[in-house]
Length: 194
Image 1 (tube, rainbow, N blue to C red):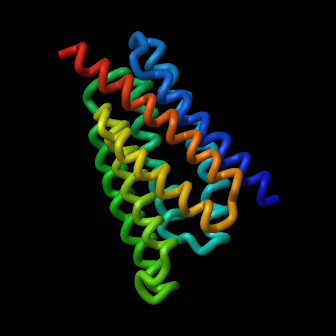
Image 2 (cartoon, one colour):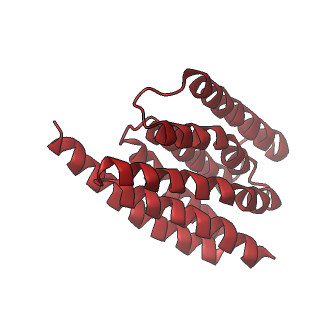
């Protein structure tokens, strides 16, 4: 069952990064379609990630995965509407949910562990910052969200290695390659458009 969850969550997460990376530098219609697919596949992988992380008492990371869904929906709606102006109500909801996830995840982890007492919690904080800020920035089409995804991938790969999840460790490292590629293309594209 554990390997099936790793394949489900890790596979869809990797597809998310592939679609996002491939979208960079493409003409607008194809870019929009690839981003919409990327947002959808990630949302479909969230349940597996939450199950895996809760099973390891990774409360911060589990809250991030669940708390990031509104930011993913914001990105999906933003890509679908093909607009540079985010939907204000959904933007506020995603922001609120992001902060609420931070408070709940960190609070419960502190309660369960009695403070920050383990290396896994430090890695989870890296995942938290990288995922929530990266998702939010990319949903708003800010290319520096890729840098936060790099932090997230490195932190999550280290956490999964520490917790003996080899499939997810490798998946995170492969995802990191696509994140680096996506950021490089996005940066070149933004420089050309100036």
